[in-house]
Length: 116
Length: 116
Image (cartoon, rainbow over all chains, first blue to last red; front, side, top):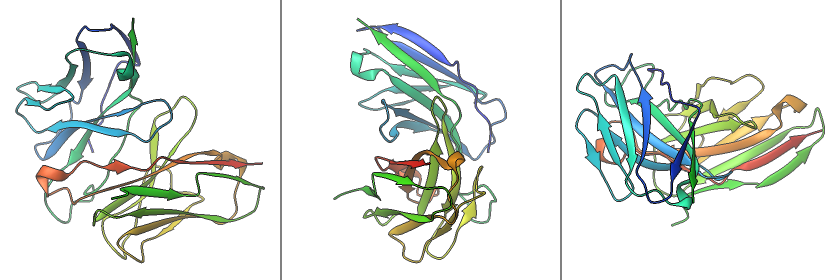
């Protein structure tokens, strides 16, 4: 599985957009980019995922660069409840027989602090 | 629909004791995972399973065993607990990665284990 690199921490003002970057320069063609977050000590929560096109759902937007070596998670209007650790993960999708099929490896993540 | 349920939520063990953590999911997911999370760190994959009757090692498998006798259950065993295994344990499940539209993982709420 490709490794990801994220800044350890970021601050964001409440109501402003939070842009969380992730580098995944060794990503391969059959790997998707996933984002999860973990609030306090709860179990991680899925946010969004994508392959190469930009994606948007009710929680966030995911922007993936054309070369797929990096991506940005955007929380358009951050609230205090968005304070959490955000994890960027790349994961093999598709095909039986891959030695990495099924693995879901987390890195250190970015601690986002939303401030009033 | 309970999602992913972990049992127990808290446990204190003495060094050398054994115990089994149970993870149950009611979403008919093929993949299941066990992670540990230590203070200030991200989640590390212990073992995972890509289907009933199969298991595979993750990043930190030593000192743990797993079994997936039924599709809905994934058991994590500690044969001889050590203080280094004091941690919060999370279980997760997901559909197979080639089910592209629904590959996000769902997590349980965690088991806090202390080994004294």
